[in-house]
Amino acid sequence: MRCYIYLFRHGTTEDNSAGKFSGWRQSPLNKRGKDDAKIVALRLKNKKIDVAYQSKLIRSKETLKEVLKFHKECKIVVTDDRMIERSYGALQGKTHLQYIKKNSPEKYDKFHRGYKTKPPKGESIKQVEKRVKSFIKDLLKLIKKDKVNVAISAHGNSMRPFRRYFEKMTVKQMMEIENPYDNCFEYVIKC
Image (cartoon, rainbow, N blue to C red):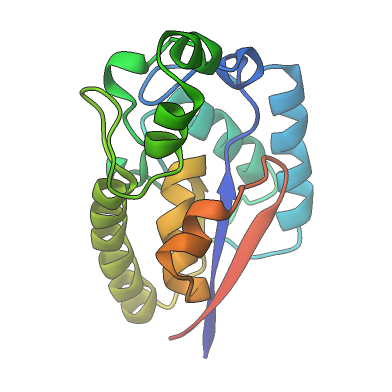
Protein backbone atom coordinates (compact mmCIF):
# COMPACT_ATOMS: atom_id res chain seq x y z
CA MET A 1 0.00 0.00 0.00
CA ARG A 2 1.13 3.55 -0.70
CA CYS A 3 0.59 6.55 1.53
CA TYR A 4 1.41 10.16 0.73
CA ILE A 5 2.96 13.20 2.33
CA TYR A 6 1.93 16.55 0.85
CA LEU A 7 4.42 19.21 1.91
CA PHE A 8 3.88 22.91 1.20
CA ARG A 9 5.02 26.30 2.36
CA HIS A 10 2.69 28.89 3.83
CA GLY A 11 1.60 31.70 1.52
CA THR A 12 3.38 35.05 1.27
CA THR A 13 3.14 37.20 4.41
CA GLU A 14 3.34 40.88 5.26
CA ASP A 15 6.91 40.28 6.51
CA ASN A 16 7.88 38.42 3.33
CA SER A 17 6.68 41.32 1.20
CA ALA A 18 8.54 43.84 3.37
CA GLY A 19 11.81 41.83 3.22
CA LYS A 20 11.77 41.20 6.97
CA PHE A 21 13.13 38.28 8.95
CA SER A 22 9.94 36.67 10.27
CA GLY A 23 11.29 33.70 12.16
CA TRP A 24 8.87 33.01 14.99
CA ARG A 25 6.97 36.31 14.62
CA GLN A 26 3.26 36.17 13.93
CA SER A 27 3.01 37.55 10.40
CA PRO A 28 -0.33 36.91 8.66
CA LEU A 29 -0.81 36.15 5.00
CA ASN A 30 -1.20 39.18 2.77
CA LYS A 31 -3.48 39.29 -0.30
CA ARG A 32 -0.94 37.46 -2.43
CA GLY A 33 -0.42 34.91 0.38
CA LYS A 34 -4.13 34.17 0.51
CA ASP A 35 -4.02 33.57 -3.24
CA ASP A 36 -0.93 31.35 -2.80
CA ALA A 37 -2.85 29.28 -0.23
CA LYS A 38 -5.82 28.95 -2.60
CA ILE A 39 -3.49 27.73 -5.37
CA VAL A 40 -2.00 25.07 -3.06
CA ALA A 41 -5.54 24.10 -2.03
CA LEU A 42 -6.55 23.64 -5.68
CA ARG A 43 -3.41 21.59 -6.37
CA LEU A 44 -4.38 19.24 -3.52
CA LYS A 45 -8.14 19.32 -4.11
CA ASN A 46 -8.37 15.77 -5.50
CA LYS A 47 -5.96 14.18 -3.04
CA LYS A 48 -7.01 12.41 0.17
CA ILE A 49 -5.74 13.92 3.41
CA ASP A 50 -6.30 12.08 6.69
CA VAL A 51 -4.02 14.02 9.06
CA ALA A 52 -2.74 17.59 8.75
CA TYR A 53 0.14 19.34 10.51
CA GLN A 54 0.73 23.02 11.16
CA SER A 55 3.01 25.11 13.35
CA LYS A 56 1.71 27.59 15.93
CA LEU A 57 2.39 30.46 13.53
CA ILE A 58 -0.65 32.11 11.95
CA ARG A 59 0.75 31.87 8.42
CA SER A 60 0.98 28.08 8.67
CA LYS A 61 -2.54 27.85 10.13
CA GLU A 62 -4.11 30.20 7.56
CA THR A 63 -2.59 28.26 4.66
CA LEU A 64 -3.67 24.89 6.05
CA LYS A 65 -7.20 26.18 6.71
CA GLU A 66 -7.51 27.06 3.02
CA VAL A 67 -6.24 23.62 1.95
CA LEU A 68 -8.60 21.78 4.29
CA LYS A 69 -11.68 23.48 2.83
CA PHE A 70 -11.55 20.70 0.21
CA HIS A 71 -10.84 17.92 2.73
CA LYS A 72 -13.76 17.22 5.03
CA GLU A 73 -12.26 13.72 5.44
CA CYS A 74 -9.41 15.23 7.47
CA LYS A 75 -10.51 15.03 11.09
CA ILE A 76 -7.10 15.40 12.74
CA VAL A 77 -5.10 18.66 12.73
CA VAL A 78 -1.92 18.63 14.82
CA THR A 79 0.15 21.65 15.84
CA ASP A 80 3.79 20.59 16.06
CA ASP A 81 6.53 23.17 16.40
CA ARG A 82 9.33 20.85 15.42
CA MET A 83 8.52 22.00 11.88
CA ILE A 84 8.24 25.69 12.73
CA GLU A 85 10.30 28.29 10.86
CA ARG A 86 13.91 28.94 11.81
CA SER A 87 14.34 31.41 14.66
CA TYR A 88 16.11 34.54 13.49
CA GLY A 89 16.58 35.65 17.11
CA ALA A 90 17.57 39.30 17.46
CA LEU A 91 16.90 39.91 13.76
CA GLN A 92 13.20 39.00 13.83
CA GLY A 93 11.20 41.98 12.56
CA LYS A 94 14.24 43.68 11.02
CA THR A 95 14.71 43.89 7.26
CA HIS A 96 17.40 42.10 5.30
CA LEU A 97 18.49 45.52 4.01
CA GLN A 98 18.93 46.89 7.55
CA TYR A 99 21.19 43.97 8.42
CA ILE A 100 23.26 44.24 5.24
CA LYS A 101 23.72 48.03 5.63
CA LYS A 102 24.84 47.63 9.25
CA ASN A 103 27.07 44.61 8.57
CA SER A 104 27.86 43.37 5.05
CA PRO A 105 26.40 41.23 2.27
CA GLU A 106 29.05 38.60 3.07
CA LYS A 107 27.99 38.38 6.74
CA TYR A 108 24.36 38.16 5.66
CA ASP A 109 25.09 35.36 3.18
CA LYS A 110 27.14 33.46 5.75
CA PHE A 111 24.24 32.91 8.14
CA HIS A 112 21.30 33.31 5.76
CA ARG A 113 22.46 30.55 3.42
CA GLY A 114 24.96 28.90 5.74
CA TYR A 115 24.26 25.53 7.32
CA LYS A 116 26.01 25.89 10.68
CA THR A 117 26.10 29.67 11.16
CA LYS A 118 23.43 31.25 13.37
CA PRO A 119 21.98 34.75 13.28
CA PRO A 120 22.41 36.59 16.62
CA LYS A 121 20.42 34.65 19.29
CA GLY A 122 18.82 32.55 16.51
CA GLU A 123 19.09 29.06 15.04
CA SER A 124 21.29 27.54 12.38
CA ILE A 125 19.75 25.40 9.65
CA LYS A 126 21.64 22.49 11.21
CA GLN A 127 19.61 23.02 14.40
CA VAL A 128 16.38 23.27 12.39
CA GLU A 129 17.28 20.04 10.62
CA LYS A 130 17.74 18.24 13.95
CA ARG A 131 14.20 19.02 15.11
CA VAL A 132 12.67 18.37 11.67
CA LYS A 133 14.37 14.94 11.55
CA SER A 134 12.76 14.12 14.90
CA PHE A 135 9.39 15.14 13.44
CA ILE A 136 9.97 13.02 10.29
CA LYS A 137 10.88 9.97 12.38
CA ASP A 138 7.60 10.19 14.33
CA LEU A 139 5.63 11.05 11.20
CA LEU A 140 6.84 7.96 9.33
CA LYS A 141 5.91 5.75 12.30
CA LEU A 142 2.39 7.22 12.29
CA ILE A 143 1.96 6.83 8.53
CA LYS A 144 3.09 3.21 8.54
CA LYS A 145 1.06 2.29 11.63
CA ASP A 146 -2.21 4.05 10.71
CA LYS A 147 -1.88 3.99 6.89
CA VAL A 148 -2.71 7.69 6.49
CA ASN A 149 -2.01 10.46 4.00
CA VAL A 150 -0.58 13.61 5.57
CA ALA A 151 -0.53 17.32 4.69
CA ILE A 152 2.17 19.56 6.21
CA SER A 153 1.85 23.35 6.21
CA ALA A 154 5.51 24.21 6.72
CA HIS A 155 7.89 27.14 6.40
CA GLY A 156 10.65 27.98 3.93
CA ASN A 157 13.51 26.92 6.18
CA SER A 158 11.81 23.93 7.81
CA MET A 159 11.05 22.61 4.32
CA ARG A 160 14.76 22.45 3.51
CA PRO A 161 15.45 19.43 5.81
CA PHE A 162 12.20 17.75 4.70
CA ARG A 163 13.26 18.02 1.08
CA ARG A 164 16.83 17.00 1.87
CA TYR A 165 15.56 13.84 3.56
CA PHE A 166 12.99 12.80 0.95
CA GLU A 167 14.87 13.98 -2.15
CA LYS A 168 18.30 12.73 -0.99
CA MET A 169 20.00 16.13 -1.27
CA THR A 170 23.41 17.14 -0.04
CA VAL A 171 23.69 19.99 2.47
CA LYS A 172 24.88 22.26 -0.35
CA GLN A 173 21.90 21.37 -2.55
CA MET A 174 19.50 21.88 0.35
CA MET A 175 20.89 25.33 1.09
CA GLU A 176 20.55 26.43 -2.53
CA ILE A 177 16.87 25.57 -3.00
CA GLU A 178 14.09 28.11 -2.85
CA ASN A 179 10.74 26.82 -1.67
CA PRO A 180 7.74 28.21 -3.56
CA TYR A 181 4.74 29.75 -1.82
CA ASP A 182 2.20 28.32 -4.26
CA ASN A 183 3.23 24.74 -4.90
CA CYS A 184 3.50 21.47 -3.04
CA PHE A 185 5.77 18.46 -2.92
CA GLU A 186 4.43 14.93 -2.88
CA TYR A 187 6.30 12.01 -1.32
CA VAL A 188 5.22 8.37 -1.54
CA ILE A 189 5.67 6.20 1.55
CA LYS A 190 5.29 2.42 1.57
CA CYS A 191 2.84 1.74 4.35
